[in-house]
Length: 615
Ligand code: GCB
Image 1 (cartoon, rainbow, N blue to C red):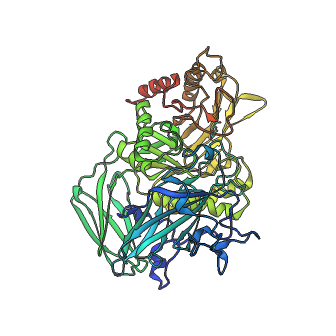
Image 2: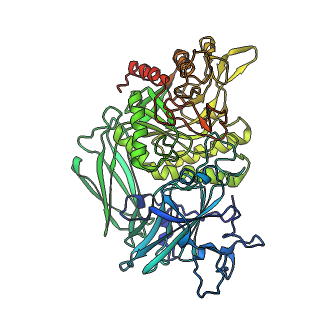
């Protein structure tokens, strides 16, 4: 990560209260709820593997130059002023890419492209009403975004799966505006994720972009949560940007007959505490959501929120005070049909969750990074509990403080984005990270940060199992991270990376924590339509048998609170090269990359049916 990393502003409200014009903002969560002008659609694009539009021939950044070269600095979006002028690029005649969307599945030559692509979108703007402020909001850009409006740099954002925002009040023009994003998805050792993953690193402006105008004083964030299922008290706050003390904020939940007014404190925050007479709690069986409205001065937002509690008691997970078994499945944010690639619409997100429902799931693990906003909002609506994760995966650069700051920013932005989603019950800190002192320090700092930002959810991380050579069939979870998290979760691949399926019958478990146990992955590959005996690897029968053998093995785990097999749908992974079988896909899906169910789907469905799942 570079030192030019975006300036992080912790609370927009605090910063805006200063008389300094705010140029850099990051996640201002409630801009999602404000109406805006969509900037989705066709953007002009320039593929720039050598970053010619960014660096001059001495490798100095054009955007740091006093007088950037009109001929070469792409962010200027220049046109020849006369027939003799040298301008070595032209957005107007460059081909389009669709936003939201990864670039890889839009043009065959970009399938495995990693590097820089410049995006440009022009839009007309009529002007801001007196005192209004304007922001441009990106749902996600993978991985690094350098953003420019009308030839001026707005800032840089790093991290591929969380939203970010820049204030553009001063830079918007009446008439035509040019918004340019240099998107760079090159992997880096010190990045989060790092160079080595088992998924394809799609590049592009992968989520929605919009331009939002708001009053000078506006609602920038809010939190509401049920304090206890016994008292039914709800508490929370609303953050007003640009406000000091004494601003009046109204919060109402019409269906509950609640309308409460509170005043902001000096930091622009208004606190709420109330106990509705009749509150129906959110659960997978009854995913009740209430319309919550917030008003402050000339600004208003509304969204649907569910109320529930989640905590642990010994080896149990309690939802609304009652034990719950998590019938889960892992999901990557990838859609199998329509050309594949990153999920591009709420409709695609919904299809993934409906498949999980059909399996009988009440829980999904959204691997290995924050999924799009639609996913968690739909999970609220559909009654599916969620494990939400940040891409701290495998071998992160544990001792690099910028890497830590990066991971912490992604975690904080994810929490800020989704803190009002009843469906999310677990924040996950990491996946299969090798035990070391540096790694445990890194993750315990992340855990402390997560707890300071949100006390209404559980923490976990997908750990690994170990065994002693003297007792190879006794699997032990022994990881200092297990002392830190609330749920002891681990991945296991007995029968795939670890012997054959018949090994499952020999395994016993030692998990010495008085905490719920969750198996966050198991599974094996099958090429859909490839059939053979159950001993023949890659066939649907092999995968089916693996599931049949694994489920009774997991039943033997003391304190098992659920599991999420790997994975709902086959997904792209360049590590997976076996011709005719993998062809660039991890084939552990229960559904193929063409959207067809494999035999093991029915095995898991039947198990979940017996455990209360009703597809
Ligand atoms: C794992 C990883 C997951 C991989 C999976 C596999 O343990 O967490 O990202 O895709 O195994 O298929 O090997």
